[in-house]
Length: 257
Image (cartoon, rainbow, N blue to C red; front, side, top):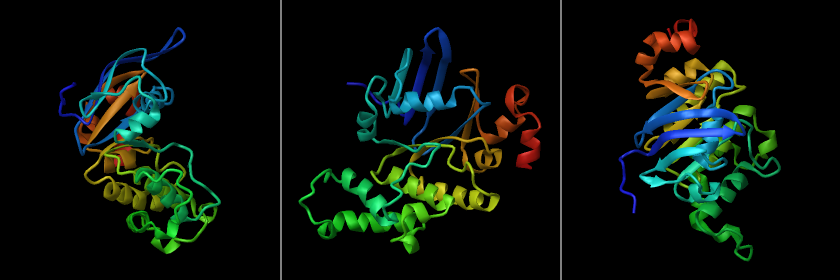
C-alpha cells in the first residue's frame, strides 16, 4: 500500500515520447491539496500532453504520476475519475439538446450510482434532483433551468461544463483553457465562478490569458519544450528573468499591472 505523500497531485520525472519525438522531458511537479495551479507556456510546450497524462488519456513513457499518494499512471481515465479527478476540455462538451437541469442531472445520476437504471422514475430521485438544483445555483444557472444547452451563451455553456465536471464531487479538477473565447467582462465573472466552485478542491488549469493566470493561481508552473522551468508564486514568476526570457517577456508588465 502506497503511503500518502501529502500532495494532491505529484509528477515524478515524467517523460512522454511519441515515436522518437520526446514531448515531455522529465517533469517534476507537486501540487498541495486545495491549491490552484496554472500551467502556462508557449504553444507546443507540452501543457495539453501533461493534462492527458494526468487524466489517463496517455500513459507516460517513464516516471510516476500520483494522486493523493496513490499511483495513477497506467490507469484508465474512468478509473482515475472514480478516484476523484475530473477534467474539462478546450472544446465545450455538453448535451446540446438537453436542458441545463438535464445535463447536470445526467452527471449527478452517474455519480450517485444510478448509472443506467432506466426503470427508475427520475422525478422520484430526490437526492439526485436536490444535488442538481444545488449545482445549478452554484454555477448561477438556476434561472436558466429549462433552457436547452444549445441556446445558452458561450460563457453559460462553459459554466455548465464546469458544473458537469464537479457534479461527481471530484477533489482534483483539471480545466483546459476555461476562459478561451470569452469577452473581458465574461472572463472576469468566470474567474470568480471558478474560485467559488473549486473552493476546497485542487485545481490545475491550462490558461493563456495572463490576467486569468495571475488573478486565479496560487502558484504557476511554466512549461517550455516539455520541461517545467519555473514553479512558484505569481509574484515570483512575474519577476523571474528566466521566465521572461523564455516565455512571458513584456506580457507580465503589460497584462498584470
